[in-house]
Length: 275
Ligand SMILES: Nc1ncnc2c1ncn2[C@@H]1O[C@H](COP(=O)(O)OP(=O)(O)OP(=O)(O)O)[C@@H](O)[C@H]1O
Image (cartoon, rainbow, N blue to C red; front, side, top):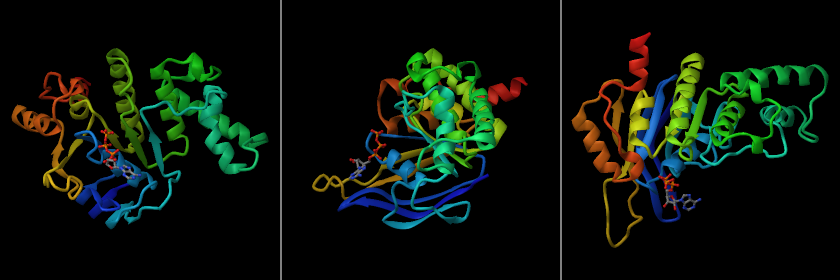
C-alpha cells in the first residue's frame, strides 16, 4: 500500500498563495479526513495528490518517490458530483477504464481480456454493494448508488490511495450513514490509504484515523491572497476530548454541516469495540 509525504509544500497561483509550508507524513493505510473553511485549499491539495496540479515549491512524495505529474492507476478519485457515464450500465462504467487502457482507440475489450475485466468489475460492484445493479443505467440509480458506482470505478485499478472530495456531501443523512459503513468496511478490507475532504466535521471525526484542519493563520487585509493555508490541527482519532472538538469547530467556522453531537468514541472505534 502507499504512504504520502509533503515536505515544505507550497502552492501558488500567480501571486496568490493557496497553501504554505505544508509538512505531512501519512503512513500507508491511514484514513485521513480533511476539514477547513471554504476556499482554503483543500481541493487544491487533493488535486496535487491526484497529480492534476503540481507544487510551486517543496516536495510531494508517493510511496517515497516524487508524485507523478499526472493522474495514474495508483490513485483513485471520487468527487461530490457524480462522475459516471450516463450511456453505460453500471458494469460498463466500471469496466471502461480497463477498456481504454488496453484498447485506447476503440475502448473495447474482447475475449479473455474482456472476461477478466468483467469479473474484476463485478467484484468491485460487489465490494460497494451494487452487484444487483450491474445492468442498470446511472439514471436508474439513486444518488447514493451512483456514488457507490463512482467508488467502484475508482477502485478498479487497485489503487494504493483513494482520494475523496466530499463524496457524500450531496446525499441525505440516512444514505450517508450507509455510505459511511460501506467506506469503512472497504477501507478495513483493502488497507487502502484514504484522504477524504468533508464539510461535515462529525463525519471527519467519525470516519478518520486522523483529522487534518486546513486554515489560514496569517491575514493581510491589504493583500488577502498573500498568505496561504497551513495544517493547523493534525489530530489522531479514536478518542478525542470535547475541548479539542470545540477548538476545531471554531477554526472551521459555522455551517449547518459542522453541527452534531460529539462522539468521544468514534463510530469506527465503537464498531471495533462491539466486535
Ligand atoms: N486553477 C486555479 N487557478 C487559480 N486559482 C485557483 C485554481 N484552483 C483553485 N484556485 C484558488 O485556490 C483557492 C483554494 O481553492 P480550493 O478549491 O482548493 O478550496 P477548498 O478549500 O477546496 O474550497 P471549498 O471547501 O469551497 O471546496 C481558491 O481561492 C481558488 O479560487
